Amino acid sequence: MALFVASCVTPRKTHYLQEPDKYVPNYPEYHTPADYNIQISDELHIRVITLDPESQKLFNASTGSSTSLSSSYKGLYTYTVYDDGTIDFPYIGSIHVANLTTRQIKHKIEAALKDYVKDCSVEVRLVNNYFNLITERSASRHKLNKEKMNIFEALAVGGDLGPYSDRKHVKILRQLPSGETEIKEFDIRSKEILESEYYYIQPNDIIYVKAFQGQFFRVNSFLTAIGVTSATISFGLLVYQIVKLCIPNSAAE
Image (cartoon, rainbow, N blue to C red; front, side):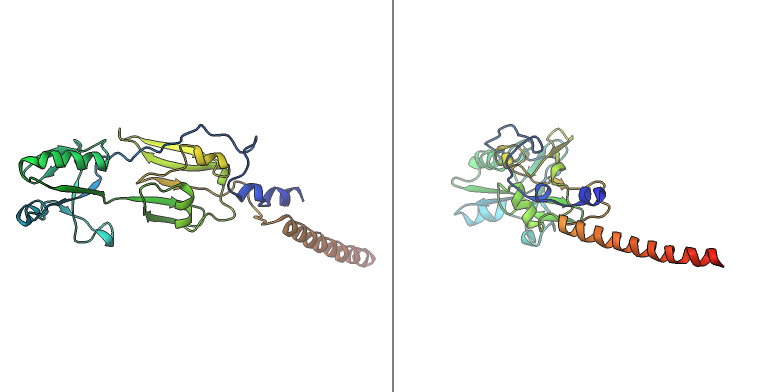
């Protein structure tokens, strides 16, 4: 009975936005999520918008390296961020973009284009804008459909977590601008996560959720545990009665 109770999946283990207590930790406040900084090997799609047809054709020519990361980006030309943190842009040359946001890169290229185009606007988008979700049920890769996607939206895109997923020890693997990988572990059940640094995910994040440890029986509810226990006891009593009837007969022979 103790084993079945320990294996039971209770609401405390699966429900979100619970009141924090000694089981669900309080998180430090983190109200403003940081913008993603471009890193080495990222792929950027850069488009120059101007009323001058010749200039638009000149700067939007196929000078970058094409990519097939997503069907929504097929036919677009991208710029790969080199190991030194730069990209090669037509007629401007090398531009340092590492550790900058797409908005900062936009302003930087617009300033550099003033000598070539009088009035223009630059559009910069991150092509490899994905996150990865690894759970007890499957592993999948999904596109970030918005600039600020939170952890619950990411789980919803992946089909949410299974009943045996360990929500107490969710991990995010995040690559830092320095090239190192940071591992963040948190309890997703607490409503305190709404104001924490774990609430928003970033491009290239890997969300890893393992299964409960020691869930041998994997019972979904306490009533199921009672039913399985009763059936086990009944079967044991049946075997006992059969053995009890057979032992005297064997002794008589």
